[in-house]
Amino acid sequence: MIFMQLGIFKDYWGDFSDNAWSVHIHYWTGTIWYLYLILQPYYATHGQISRHRTNGIIGMFIAGGVCLTALSMMNRDIVTTEKALALPERFGPFQPWFFFGVAAVEIVMMTAFAFAIIKSIIHRKDIENHAWWLITTVFLIMMPALGRGIQGVYIGIHMKEWPNTNIMTPIYYTQILIIGMLLLGAWKYEKLRHPATWLAVGVNLFIFLLEPLGRSEAMQTFLKALIKG
Image (tube, rainbow, N blue to C red; front, top):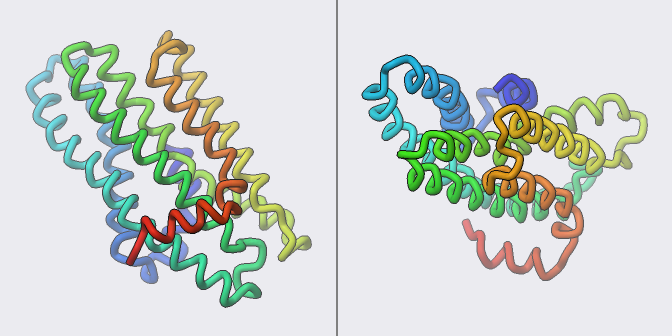
């Protein structure tokens, strides 16, 4: 929760009033989802199972909001590619391929998130499986928020290199950090061999392909056809 909020803090709160409605909805559903994953285990382990189950139903609604609002915002990525192409001096190192790559990996991230939520529902009577499928969702969707924060710090440190700053280096740092936190948690709770752990590791490794995916003309054509305003 702390890493995610620190990552997104400046990007979201820095221009709060200028953010689109969809951005606000996605931010707050994501934040509430993290809070639910902190609060729900307390209820489950302190004799408040009825409250846990009631909140769990509401939580599934929140999870759906996180997933659907993220997917609904993807047209913004495609629109941004057009702006980056038309105004390269404004975007500097953020060339169109970067936003195509972001859209490509976000589809995989949110699909995996939805899958993990469904698996948690299927295993709702097996508390260990149920809990771990839900816990790993935070690592499936952490990159955009944390990546922006680390990317902002990196660009600030290397401002002299602008507009030739390597914007992928901080993304790689982000992925290493997320995978490290995931594996640390999996080790602590003895879930290193759990399929939810494998899924979360696989998705975060996939994000290392953001640049080649974004530069692929076939992928760009596919995304333009798939994501329409």
